[in-house]
Amino acid sequence: MSLFHYLILSSLVFSLGIFGVMARKSLIGILISVELILNAANLNLLALARFGVLPSLFSQVSVLLIIALAAAEAAVGLALALSLFRTFKSSDINLFSSLKG
Image 1: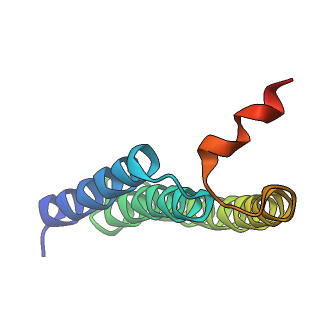
Image 2 (image 1 turned 180 degrees about the vertical axis):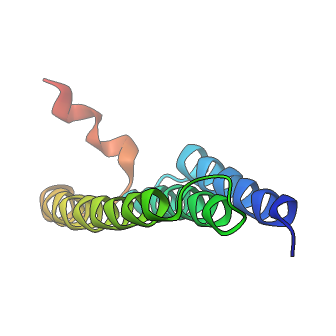
């Protein structure tokens, strides 16, 4: 596979993630879509490093930071989702507008 193929795959995964964030009404679905977006960024960085566009060490460190960021986002997001589910007995994000104050 060439760099073009990896970039096309990454853009498709990114587009699916953006569509998921915009179309989902469930908080868990939105979190999964954000994970897709972060994985698309990882795929981009690794493909660019593989084909020599970016330095390999920079890309590997960036990917590890993005993985750590995704893990932290998942932990905080799931804790927030669990708390909101216990309060509202639903994961529909339209019900959370009453939190605005």
